[in-house]
Image (cartoon, rainbow, N blue to C red; front, side):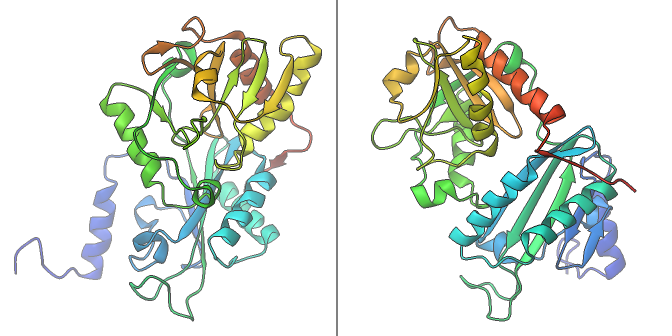
Length: 328
């Protein structure tokens, strides 16, 4: 028996799990597991069984919400989408919506994190390595409180550069369902990075713009209309939908002329004044170059700036989308 294949004792296992995080600030502040029956604060013990079907078959869903100034933003909208994803994936809800919300808020309170992200999952359960879990498997619910995804400041100050990915867009059912199977998204992101770009853009079989790797995309047309692709074949982005609502206020100020959700051809999109990514993690980020060609004048535009301000204000001051966390 070699050192690589020795049988570990329980104490050795716990020691080795600790070493995985040794000297690293994971940013993982608290983790809830319905399988373990509570909240874990030691990041090395935030684990999921290998035979959980979310792990080895990708049969699971997730969603994300933001924490800002000790309040959770837009949780109900994200949970509603989460429940739709569960239905699309033939996943039973481990708890009713209000109980899931309470678990999320309790885990946030225990984390003591005032700013960051909440990510939560449903898996179909454990029990075998087949395609479907055994009949007595219980769906599991997990919640992670962490610092959030980190994007460079230059994305916002200088703008992002993207390519049209060579990978096909997901079929509609998989695109509108926020499942844990993000292989196409990951491959697109890797392809962009390998070629020196920041991200990629999916294009559908009709030549219409889809979405980015983990964010929606929108445009400002030459006649000052804010345009977003239809949500039929892409993820129904909660942040994107909220931005489109908030953007209506810019019409009365004469900053834009209209807000349209419509098919947008690649040709039309390339001729836009401004292009942007929108998402709960990235916020609103300008795109200044697509396939080595400038969008507009090749610099972040004023309407992206206005939309970013609208979202920032909503996250801090919204009257109906914020839940105050009861920290212990």
